[in-house]
Image (tube, rainbow, N blue to C red):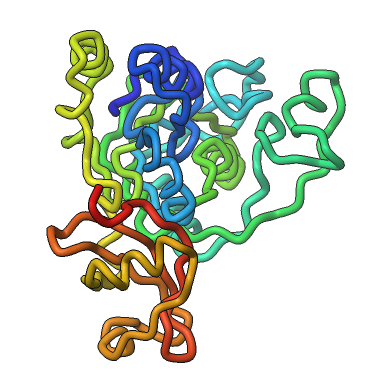
Length: 297
């Protein structure tokens, strides 16, 4: 789904749950209400695949506003003007090099990180300063694609970012502004990709509403293992699938060739190519992790 600005990720999950009547609905990574972009939504048995997407890399288009800092590191917070140097595009581009590659990044105070059982944003809202530890993240690609200095006191930059899961764009805007001596905060954000799911392939909220209202959910669905092509695929006979479905391991001669390494995860399919299970290959046997399709169904 292409999430619009406004609703929360939970709002959209609740909408899909209500319109489909399916209780088990989940998503593949929260977007803040002011953010837009790719929100993978999983329905029914496919919700069991969410865990395989948690480490998916992300891509974003971020608007960073300089000349002030924000209490929430984004446009929704209380702004504090910074008396810093006048920036040029060249200044910003030169500083970007320091943010490419591995980083130790401190999450925003207003984040969902838990501290002693409480969310950081809960502490921040009550005037407490959360003690957040730096997290290891990696920014694979970081490029400035647009620059606007029509307001010299509040110049803006559009950044295209590719990064590992868990990277905060609000923290990137904050830290970039601090490094430049001007302050900075996130003014807008679009997630352009979440792992294999890309914005150009995502359905708009209007299309999702229409299809679900007319009982055409299948028009929106991808196979349960979509985006998991990195896991090798192995076809099993009906007898072997029946064994896996009982939670029992299966000895398979060619699984060793398909498995990337001992303990490697494989996508198990039936004769028609439908996903039947996710299994690990260990000690010459396939051990079922999740079973989705019962033979004959």
